[in-house]
Figure: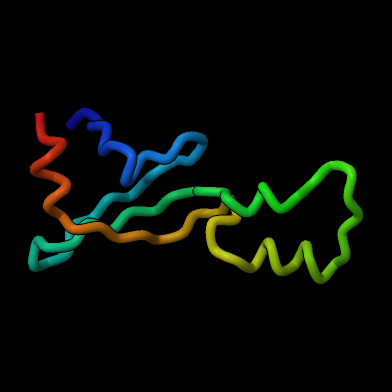
Length: 80
């Protein structure tokens, strides 16, 4: 079927939400997202240690896909 905008809970500006799946009991919607809030920690005028860079890469919301979940009731809210 065609894609449906899931609203601000799932669709974050600048991030891709993928692979939405509903749990077997129908209560939870799981999805992947490439959110990247940690990029705000990088300042062009600053110097970075290897340790700081590694900590940013290892944390969630580093621009790589992470798994999130929301109440599947959101599907009723966004259904056409």
